[in-house]
Image (cartoon, rainbow, N blue to C red; front, top):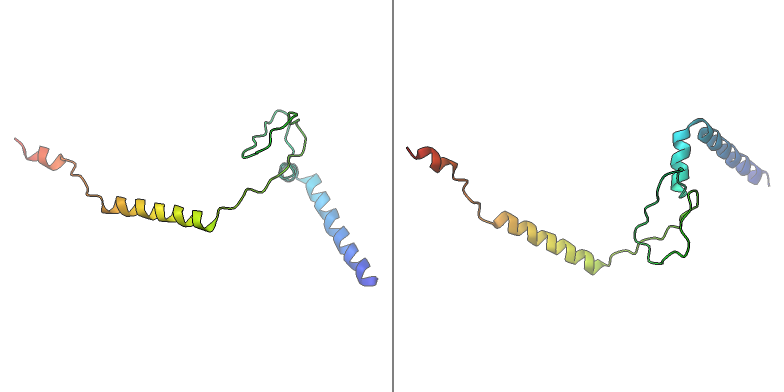
Length: 108
């Protein structure tokens, strides 16, 4: 029980220090609020990739839910990498065109 109390005191001290730091530094408080989905008055939230339509508009100061984007499959990543490699190879192997500057200098 003494060990639990010591752990709780340590956690309490860390959280109190965090609260004081947020009170002293408004930029840090703003970053923390944004990470929780809050916006300042007049800011607009841009939500990308949401599949469900909202029945109500989002109000300023409301917390936005976060949906983890689906991961790409292994075969999809391999196809993308192969396509990029083929495009790079084609660019490297393509014949280069002369600019024609040297020919214009030789003419009288």
